[in-house]
Length: 81
Image (cartoon, rainbow, N blue to C red; front, side, top):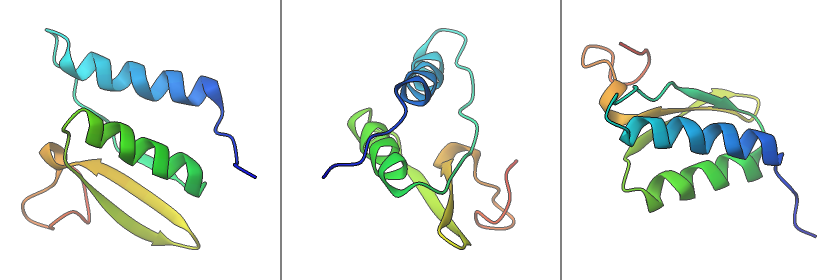
């Protein structure tokens, strides 16, 4: 049985990524996810748009997905610019 991801959540994430490619070039915010199917969908969608990201394991199954452009050079991904 395949688990479903909230369609409204998917639309919001797609809009964020589409806004990134718009002329305004809105930066992608980090996304914190605890639901594995949602994290898999988000990573696959970012990969389909050729966006590189880093997944930080926060513990207890919680992940923070950060667009590589927003990584802090000093802490190597432990924080965000």
